[in-house]
Length: 145
Image 1 (cartoon, rainbow, N blue to C red):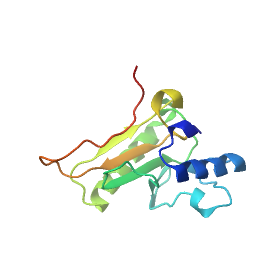
Image 2 (image 1 turned 180 degrees about the vertical axis):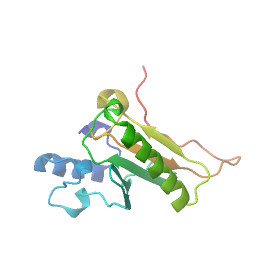
Image 3 (image 1 turned 180 degrees about the horizontal axis):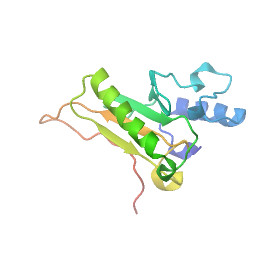
Image 4 (image 1 turned 30 degrees about the vertical axis):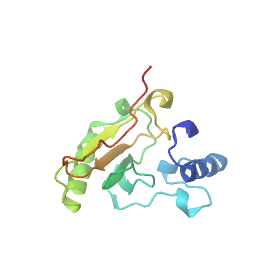
């Protein structure tokens, strides 16, 4: 876990509880607190979907598609898992009647990616429809000098 990349004091508190318990949030082995176990809204053989408890500001929907296996790099994912990942995205799109969305992933060393938890997961984010007053959703994908 990388506390420096967290966006919210409650997120840091939960991460510390998980670290103290010696468990991974995305492996669904939370601490003694119920809030440190992900709420699953859809599940298949290789993945599950959970709402992001700390969504990016301005997003309409922000879900995480999480592999059940503890992986920390995209290159570790199997072809069968990639096929199911697509099915998870299709389910989200249909279930929430979504017309446009973004999917992103952080993979590898968290000091380069801005990630908080070193368990591979995919962000599925929906913003508002663009108008003349729209501003960008801000997402950390890495760092620059």
